[in-house]
Amino acid sequence: MKDKRAIIIKGPQFQSVRDALRDILFQATRLEKRKFRTKWRSFLVNVDGSRRSINDFAPDELDQFRQLQGQENKLVDLVNRSILKCITCGRGNRNMVYNKAYDAWYCTVCYGLGLDHAQELRQERKKCRKKTVSFERKTIEDHSKTFL
Ligand SMILES: [Zn+2]
Image (tube, rainbow, N blue to C red; front, side, top):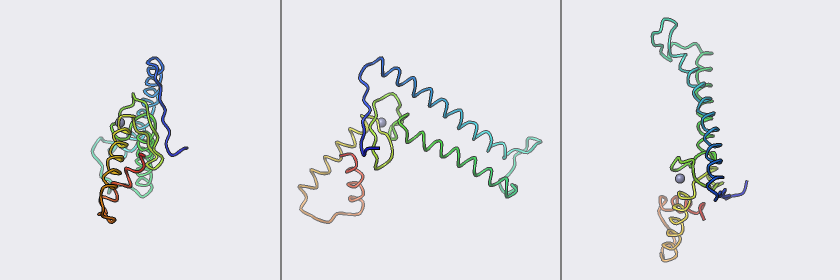
């Protein structure tokens, strides 16, 4: 995929269709997430209903438990980085911009804020005579450059 890609849908009817499709996919992933969670949580309850400690798990149970948690976390990460929702504000009913540097989608509002901030930093940098900057400043500038 390109470094930056904007998916802009202007017509309100098409936006409604887009939002409905995103909602269907989002609900489907929620159901899958719930399945993983239900399975790994079942390991934490004994047959008699009492609570079970992770320390009581047999090695193969612990592997299964961790594998299920890992699958759930992977699904959550995929959804968070998908076009279904903005990685910054979490909204899913806006036009989106992909930023390859973070392998994530931003809504146009959040992306615009990042772009404005990057442009401000660039202007400050041009005015600044110092060639060296703090590590923190460099990290912020590197992050912001991905929005330009
Ligand atoms: Zn956003």
